[in-house]
Length: 188
Image (cartoon, rainbow, N blue to C red; front, side, top):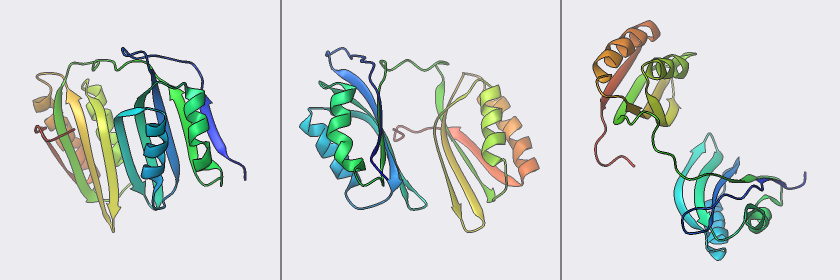
């Protein structure tokens, strides 16, 4: 299988004149993926401004935003060797500037744990969305029979009390425990 590399070539610039680019890397985990990507971007003078990286059941997944003096096509060329063996899927796409949060909400942490079952993420996030909340980060893990969900959500003022009541109802229906609390300063 040949290299898989996708690129969206529209060029968007940041206030310093460089391109704002989103880069994703997905594939079987191996040692050195983060270092390889970071080094290739550093050689181009790209600054990583936002990133998230994780391992999901043996597969590596990374999404990052970088500010680069290079175009999406140039970043694509620099990252091409990473996907040469067909194991990693690398995409590069120009993105616009960071937009302010749509609801001007306050940050909260939402956690759910209980027996795994179909529909936990769908039900819990639907309640948050229906209350005007925005999920800004979400992680789930299955540990044996126990399902864990941790999410960062932005909520409009005055919503947490009503949301807590609605989440309690959903938790009872799903047979899980739900906790909602204000996020501390340590949340990125």
